Image 1 (cartoon, helix red, strand yellow):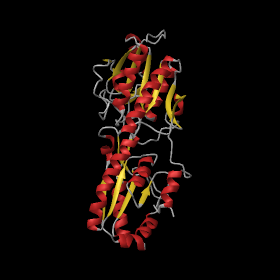
Image 2 (spheres, one colour):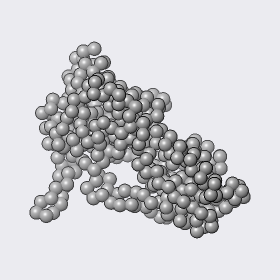
Image 3 (spheres, one colour):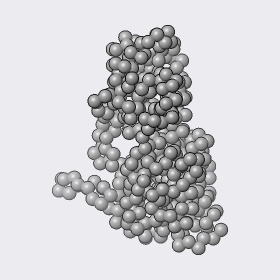
Image 4 (cartoon, one colour):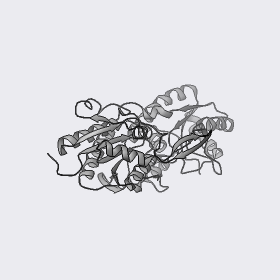
Length: 367
């Protein structure tokens, strides 16, 4: 099909942290653009860093063949580069400059008519920034944390949950053999979706999430009750952003020039040490960390990424700019791009998943 639309060339960028399903989205965008609309696609290497460096690589049916099932992103990514906040040093002093106008010049000189941005809340914030400068932009939601506002599901989430559940299955056997409490830390700085779903699927006894501040004394009492004493072992899943009542998140380090400088981590070890003291039982901590970002996407993430890729190209060709494709009620819809820009979706206290977990006797450290 030959398009009469003024859009003849689309650029595609994968920003922020990597996740399984990104290549599925890339493949779907390329196939839809070329086969359905007869337009060309270029990829931007290494996230928004590639835009700053004026780098574009042609994407076609041949060089995207075989990537659909691969994890990561063949384009590369970056979660420390923002065209709107570029660190510069002058006279020994560091400051930050907005280089987005220079990026707009790069788009124009490369003959790029529109941009598809695959990423989370920080990436969609930058995408919305370019849209406000007049660029035709559509976003695709991606994050293993599943915490992007405006969509019920994001690319990478179910693969991360599957990886976590597999790890929990293995930990059950070693925990039972040694009668230990195993504390498993998973990603989730602001929202506890991974911890909640992994804990449900991996038959955890305790799930600690950012949305519900916990009291370890209550967790310890729960793990010392008759059932858990007879069971002789326990599994605790904790999101990296979980925190005690009246306390703060556990910060691992700070990366000064990153759009999100604070890196969380270490709460799992803290919980394990304190629970060992409170329960008198041996506790061990395991951090799954970036393991959750790796591996081939599960079937659902491949299909979701494909649906998003097709919908994103169609949105551009139909003139729906400054928008983001979103999964809602089993349908792919369009929402304003600003809906996901810098905004999170949290686990609702009334969530049926949360209710179901409580009905199964899973403890959240709050009762």
